Image 1 (tube, chains in turn green, cyan):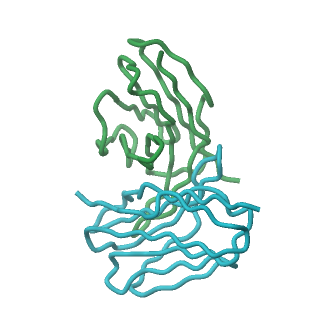
Image 2: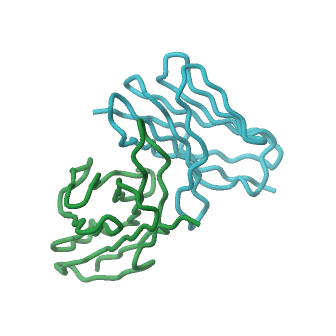
Length: 114
Length: 111
């Protein structure tokens, strides 16, 4: 069974803390994504990566960075957490074919910044 | 940039009624995907449409891709309580493989 695993289901952090959200996939997928989900706003793309050490900004990259040192692992970093980054964070992966393929999502990390 | 609009935002139905959610793009899409997210869960892929005018069925679910490849719809016949959740469309255009998600339609089914 294919799996995308996010390191935490729930996190509570203080304003100004550096926060790491980890995501691991076991499907040997080239593409990995970080989304943010807020009520009424759907899924908004923060960053994506199409290969190790490669990254591209999505629609809302401000306040975030990412790291992909190994193919199976994609980390989202909040350099200095702020209350407006309280949200559900979803990691996803997909394989590369001639066109888009289905994305597999992790279970999500609900981050609260206090 | 590409925008994908999805309506309605919420839909309340009585069990047994039909349900439809619509997705419209500002640009021509190369394909469109549909996902379902159960309450408390994560999005799960349902289907991908690629061809102009394509219609695909999965049991009580019917997916359509418009002739101009700028719109799509998901229709559920005779809803059941197990259909509860948020349905997202996600469109890709040009040579990109990065889908843009609509805001989703939350389906609430009353028994």
